[in-house]
Length: 131
Ligand SMILES: Nc1nc2c([nH]c(=O)n2[C@@H]2O[C@H](COP(=O)(O)OP(=O)(O)OP(=O)(O)O)[C@@H](O)[C@H]2O)c(=O)[nH]1
Image (cartoon, rainbow, N blue to C red; front, top):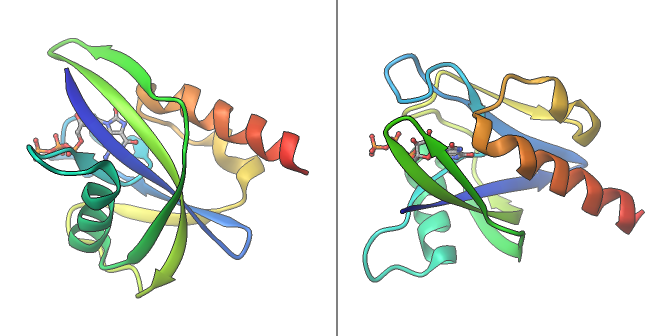
């Protein structure tokens, strides 16, 4: 099973989401940015590296959410989300087609990678409980 770490990056009440390019698996679907855990890498370390490589952003992982297992036709992934704090930088896209800073309540209206749908639900549930 492939472990994928993704960031729910919060900044000023908005959350960063990214659209996969048409050349990537799951083309044009939206995701929480991140990537595959490399051998001998800690989850938080992976996320910090991926956010720098893919978006030129410095972040700090804060809260680990419940991982989601999802089976695509050719692979099974374990998607591990972290709520993250923005530290610095301006978004510079290296791989994605598009990005957006969106209000939490608008998250469900995007065309998500299927593995992310329960992550969005979990995040909104957590926000509701916290407020
Ligand atoms: N980064 C990220 N990947 C996700 C999410 N949801 C989801 O299903 N994935 C899947 O997890 C897999 C690994 O993500 P990745 O960004 O490192 O993968 P990739 O296939 O583009 O990388 P690669 O070309 O280096 O193998 C992809 O198949 C991607 O579609 C998500 O929210 N964030």
